Image (cartoon, rainbow, N blue to C red; front, side):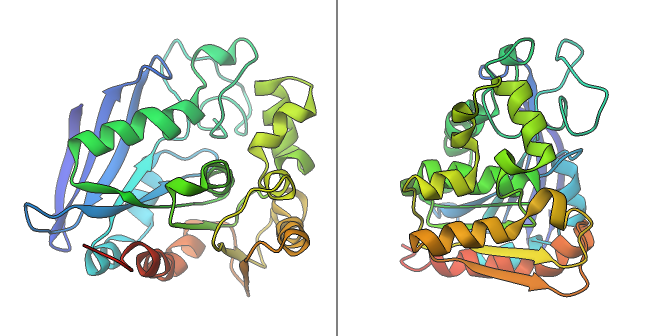
Length: 280
């Protein structure tokens, strides 16, 4: 790893790193907040997955999570949203290609060589974080915003034993049923919609995937609410299956980090209650 930046804050340290990824074949970046802790103490980790057009800098600079993470003793890791570099293919539109990896492993050319974010986040990066930082990998939570909310929900639903807590901010709940998702999944995975189901939280829940509970915050003034996000589809899937869900429609809030930062401390506390319940 190469340390890109390091700043003390709230008694801990906020750092950014780059490293060479075997999964994507590119350099990848992530940010990590490390609360103050005893040298022999291992802390729970909360993963934050960002949305379209974002890098780790968005939540690092705008998320307002550090005070809450310091209070509850939680490490927060924010990975990038896609591979990057001159050799990585891209698209002219903001919702495909670089910064729009959708947290999947692409199977279609030219994307399949580098767009392997599922492998990166499910295998490679957790191994790196566990080796290099004082994390307790038995206590993991995951959250995310928009495309990152989609990533958080689907990664957790595919591997529920890994995560003690799962939440999301304005997630894309069903990529099979919205323009963002249909473009991304068809482009990365091909025309066979059955291959898309691993990347759709509603489809996973309908197929039997379960989590102890879910917390979702959604602004009712979000311009993407009706066409792209469709939280009612998640609510309906959870009701059909008996999957516990707390869906909070927040009056007047939009899709921006003003919305995310308003409820970030609440989400950190919600995760902390589940991650620190039997803290050693």
